[in-house]
Image: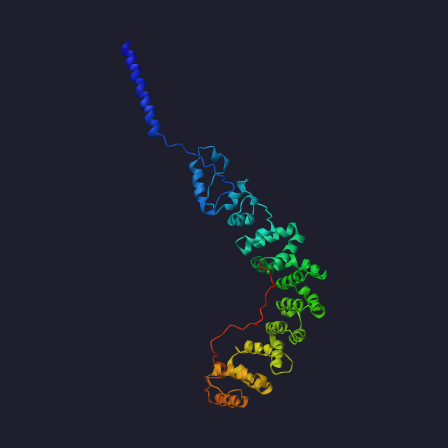
Length: 380
């Protein structure tokens, strides 16, 4: 009996040793579920790691709360978002996640207007704007005007970048706001500026009338800025009228519009202005001179000689340009330049025709030194 008892004790002890050994060496360590709120704190850089973690937990309770992943999240992010119903736009502040949520074809999310300032691309901002507009058009237009004129410089820049793509949404609303003649000058300038950025030719008669009736040079200048974005919204005769304003910003912006108008009629007006047929400021004359100075030499040289003959006030300016381009210097004397040009034409071979003369390295066309910019914004 004692032998049986001893054998039983020995077997029992051996069994305990085996159980202890298996528990410490054979089985893996207990997997502690990652209880972090995956629905709201998934960072893009950790997304693949998170998926791998979920695969490892395929026997745990946690995994049952999440879908299976059959493809890379970079290829199927819309599917991932669609199946995780707890992940909502308002619960995440991560910009990239917001981008993906707005761009998703499977989730209908309308962001707040202020969210567009934190999105990472103009394309997503535009999608967000269209969603906001479709739900609250009046409020959307009011906020566009507010942040353009009274937001921070960074906010105004964001609005400025997306304005050209919102003509269909904004045009009628902005025209209606301008017709109400707001007394707040910053708001009014913002409306006018926005009409120019969306190239609203429908608003051109209103803007022209505003120029003629307002006593504010700031409003006049903003109207001219807006119209200069769409030069053909006015006739060349109207631009010539604005060109002769005493305000340098207005006259220079009008000169810019005449050049951008293009065509033979525009060129003819520029010739007549430089010949001195219309009373304009010296700044306008110098600006137009710089703009035409990149014409081919076989056109620019005879034209310069004619200008020096007909408008002596520009002789020094044109002679300096001719000296830089030809390497010779006859000063502001049109007759000497004319004699030299005739001799040159007589001496060149048939191969070296004036048409083959190459101008100096191209320069970018100069812009008016008065900035064409958006309304002043209040710095914070």
